[in-house]
Length: 120
Image (cartoon, rainbow, N blue to C red):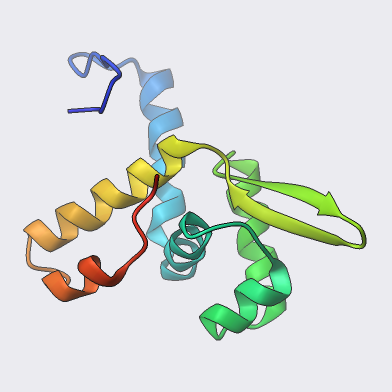
């Protein structure tokens, strides 16, 4: 179920449930899902993210702040710019599983998930 990690799902503690709910909350905003999806294709700057996703740079910055706080993305300074990427492969897997589940439920067309970049 969890691609290489054995996770006990029965009787999750309230502390663990809080941590997981906070992580899943990051996927509750469409702009964050789109940002994570774009970052799954490779690292980019705020300006490039904003341009690629047709969002205002201030919106992208605000959502990246939330995603950084939740440790779903990391920023690396390159000269005067900060380039953002997914924190690790788990984030890509989480997003891919959420997309696959939405496809399974018929909430997104199959062609939508086939076009997206798959995490490595």
